[in-house]
Length: 202
Image (cartoon, rainbow, N blue to C red):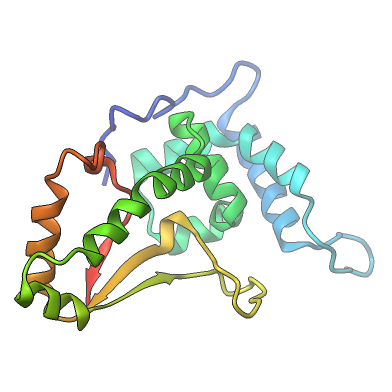
C-alpha cells in the first residue's frame, strides 16, 4: 500500500543519484546490514561493535532506495527491520526524520516539552470546583517510555524516546478530559495544537 505525502515531508521521494543505480545502492544496503551485524568476514568471524560513522554514511547514501521501498511498497515492519536494521536504532530514527523533513526531531521535542510542561502541570493542579478537585486528587499521571531491548537500563534514569513516549492517566477519564479541554482553551497556552504528548487512558 502506497504512503501519501505529507506537506512537511520535504524529501518525500528522491531520484536515484547520478552515477548510482538501484543495484549499486542494494549492494551498499547489504554492506550496511553486515556492519550492523558486527561481523568481520575473515577465516574466523569475530564480533565487533558497528561503526557509527560507517552506518550514518551508508544510511545517507541509501536513503533514496529506502524511501522508494517504504513509499511505494509499504513493507511490513518485520521486513523493514530485516532489510534496514539501522533504521530502528535511536540515532538513526532522529537522522531519518531529519532526512525526510529536514528538522531536528530531538531538539524540537525537548523544546516543545519545555514550553508546554509548565502549563500541563497547571492544568492538572488547578481547582475548578469541589467535584473536579476531588476527581483530580484521585488521578494518577505517569510517563510511559518504551526502550530498545538491547539498551542498557540505568536505575532512576529518565528515558525519553519521542516515538515511544506517552502520558498515562488513571482515574475518572471523562471528567479529567472535560477539565483538560476547558483549561486548554485558555489563551495562556499558545501553540497548544502542536503539543507533542500523547494522552492515553488506563
